[in-house]
Image (spheres, rainbow, N blue to C red):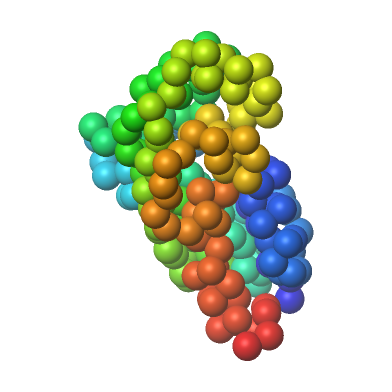
Length: 196
Ligand SMILES: Nc1nc2c(ncn2[C@@H]2O[C@H](COP(=O)(O)OP(=O)(O)OP(=O)(O)O)[C@@H](O)[C@H]2O)c(=O)[nH]1
């Protein structure tokens, strides 16, 4: 039985494909903004989990009997501010300068639903230590990486030149790329989607 990925994220699709997971992708087109507004002030991990569940349940309702994986990522500054995807290049520049020289968490949640109900969930954070960034570096980085990073919550592609932003990362690179992949693979083995 192939998995359904409730996502339009190229990074999530690439991760599952590279890991050899049999799946099809179907965007959830869920109203994430409404849920984020309703959960304003809640712990970021809870918000990411709720968004992942929203996507999984919406697609699961359309596919009874199938396992559906939803995922969500948030960038959380050390003062608790949650950064969304950049609105435009200037917004990306602002985000990068706000993260410069500081640590932020890249939180990724995954929820698997079946028959319209959540059957598994997992949230993980990667600790991202951004080195002090000069204005000239940020501008050159954006010359190279905008608009490729427009769809990335942290304004970086860690698998690309985004690596130049960091002095250290604690946690799984998969979590940064968009989901806690290894726990997802574990559950897929439990359910016979992947070989044990
Ligand atoms: N390629 C890449 N993508 C990243 C990185 N960091 C964050 N992202 C992407 O940032 C996006 C976070 O936005 P979300 O709202 O969780 O997901 P989305 O892109 O809207 O896609 P959906 O799953 O359909 O909601 C995801 O697509 C992540 O894969 C990174 O370092 N590299």
